[in-house]
Image 1 (cartoon, rainbow, N blue to C red):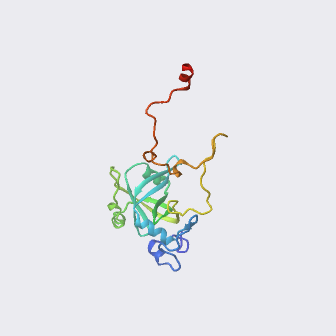
Image 2 (cartoon, rainbow, N blue to C red; image 1 turned 120 degrees about the horizontal axis):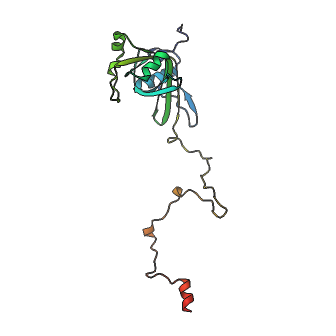
Image 3 (cartoon, rainbow, N blue to C red; image 1 turned 30 degrees about the vertical axis):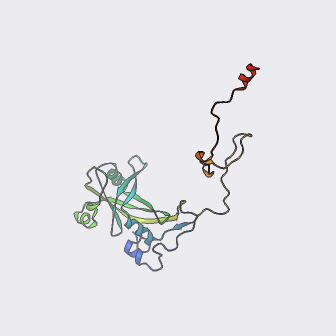
Length: 217
């Protein structure tokens, strides 16, 4: 049985815990990976509504379902139609939820793992708000699943698009494919002149070929 010292903190407990860093302070530098605090993981989860649910399929292989979710009282709630997802959880009542995104030039991802169960009590279904979860799937979804996390982890790092190139990085050069081909920069790094601005005088008639000159002599 989980105790208060080893169970995962709920969002309210994580936000109010002393000594836990919250918000965007202390963002990692380029090349570094920040391991997110529990409170920051919950903040990102509550700010989103789309994730990927991973379960163990009936054939023993992992299966992943993209879906919408809501958060209530430290648990994740999703709605689903009848099918492999419900059957997998009935046989293997564990699951994981992954969400990710990008904020202010930083990529992040959060993973929750824990026990999964099908909801049967109308009171819990009503109080969780899972009936109001919007779904882009056209199929009817009248079954509900609760994922209660036993572990939560997250990472954040600078995206490559926002990273500043380092001064010590050498320019990218093309590798010769034969001894006669010189090494040169990639063509997309060279500024080619506009052909219309060259003012090259072209002959009105083509020059005679050398073979024609030889016949005339």
